Amino acid sequence: MQIFEIIKISFNALKTNKTRSALTILGIVIGIASVIIMMSLGRGAQNLILGQIQTMGSNLIYIEPGSFDPKRGVDIMQSTLEEMSIKTLKVKDAEAIKKHPFAEMVSPSVYGTARVVYQNQDEKITFMGVTPEAYIIDDWWTIKGRTIDEQDVKEAAKVATLGYKLAQDLFGQENPIGKTIRIKKVNLRVIGVMEERGMEMFQNFDEYVYVPLTTAQKFLLGIDHLNLITVRAINADVIDPLIEDIRLILRENHNIYNPEGDLSKDDFKVMSQVEASNMMSQVTGVLTAFLSSIAAIALVVGGVGIMNIMLVSVTERTREIGLRKAVGARKKDILIQFLVEAVTLTVVGGIIGLITGLAVSFAASIGLSKVLNTNWAFAVPFSAVILALGVPTIVGLIFGIYPAKKAANLNPIEALRYE
Image (cartoon, rainbow, N blue to C red; front, side, top):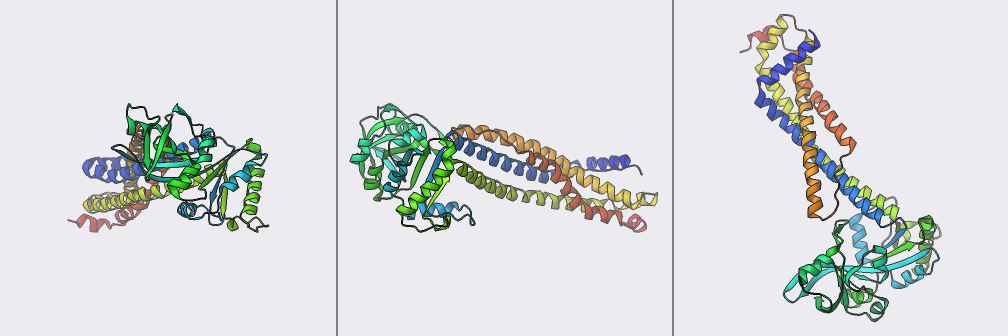
């Protein structure tokens, strides 16, 4: 029997049961579309984060509390807990780093969350205790009033600059400059409103409050240590030697004897902009793979559905199979026919799933851009397209083999007698 004739018979069999075929395809469509959407959103998030990190420049270095063990890798939860509990990073560390000839600018900071109150308005915010260098490094400036200056930090002045959206939420059309807000029972005078910045790294900086570093430490947090030190090198070429020198400076300040340079023995982490990009890429990559693997379960469910439908089809067409074998159809012809039917169902489902996944991903990128007020680019990895076209074929073959072999192995005489 010619292969084209077998394919024609297979397609006719599928068209005979259109509703059944459509419902069978639906499982594959859902599986492929889910995986495409997850991979697309994951790649979009990765591109967004890396793009935002890169726009900040390649000559930044971040210093955080807590040790880093290269063998263990990056543990976000542990890192966050360490930053909150380890108190060894001090202002004197930032001052010592500032003296290094390769360090152009150093910005120590602390942060916390609280509620800010103005009259009858009440908003949850993140506040940052900073020095004047933070505005320069972040390239973020006021559109009203002024930024925090050295005198404010020196005097632990009770002043604040507000994010653009927060200023609108609290004051509306009223001019915030000179007004008093309250954070953790501490009254702060508003001296500036920041320009609109939007979402970055999944944080809405337009809802941030900047206060002097000493004010945050003394009045809002009751601490004398730092959560972060940001260093801007004079250029990207000196990043590596500067990182090594920063480690030596901090080990000396913290009385850490570590001649072999074992990072796990330090009570701090020093990370360049490139390393931060790689870390975020690793985190988003793992998250995307995890979500995609969950979505891929729908493919397995769809495959089981195809096997079930094909087994039902074999039972319903037992007499037809017996008749075909009686007039000369070979075992191979019956096997190919049912495999073609199974693969056709999965491939059609894969194509529809690919189109559906791309359409939903594109719509999601537009929606996320508006909701998050950021440029969430539509991105689909090439591997997702290969997956959408290749996996259904494999699924069809795997889950179609058993029903096809069962049909091919039917005894023609017994099949003709089947009622």
